[in-house]
Image 1 (cartoon, rainbow, N blue to C red):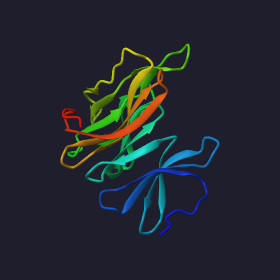
Image 2 (tube, rainbow, N blue to C red):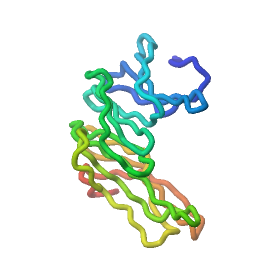
Image 3 (cartoon, helix red, strand yellow):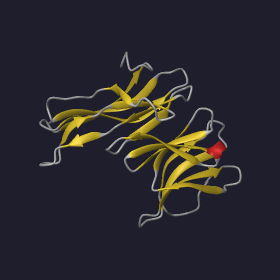
Image 4 (cartoon, rainbow, N blue to C red):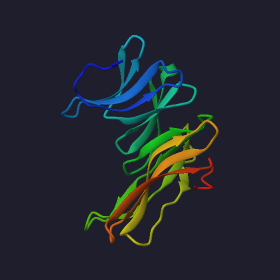
Amino acid sequence: FQLTMHRQPYVNPDLSPNGKLMAYYQSRGRGDEHLWVMDIGTRKTAKLTELADSPSWSNDGRKIVFQQGMNIYTVDLDQGNCRLKVADTLLLPYGQSFSPDDSRILYNRGFITNQSNGSIDRMLGLWIVNSDGSYNRQFIPLETTNPKKYQMLFDLDWSIDGRIATVMYEVDESQNQRYAVIVLMDGDGSNIR
């Protein structure tokens, strides 16, 4: 059944673990872009924050991690939408996901572009940060010595058993080739397959 009635774009819906709530991003144009939570049973909505994107629920259903500008925040729904900045990336992050025990957040830190020609110079790869914002560190590096060939990871998801699934894009600009594969790895970043 249809949950929403507005004609504005809805992006990145994410259901709460109990299936009763849905977090999503909605753009109404002209900078009116917000992160919302909807009670699926009543269809009542509440605005969480402005100019935010890519919500992802914690496994206990108490928190939502999201991207806002070049930062990653969590919001604790049990504490009246209290926000905590957990990562300042200096780039546009994406694909954040809580670990199975909700103690850590995995995210893609983005990439650095060549200012002279706009090509990607270096991928920053997967990073991981504790849910309280401490110990932000690189999880998997995606370094390259050839600026025309690089990898990007999108759509991260961390399973309850601790494995990580992601979409890996391989790009070779010199050969004009692009392809994507879904890869699976252990929760410590090893055994990529």
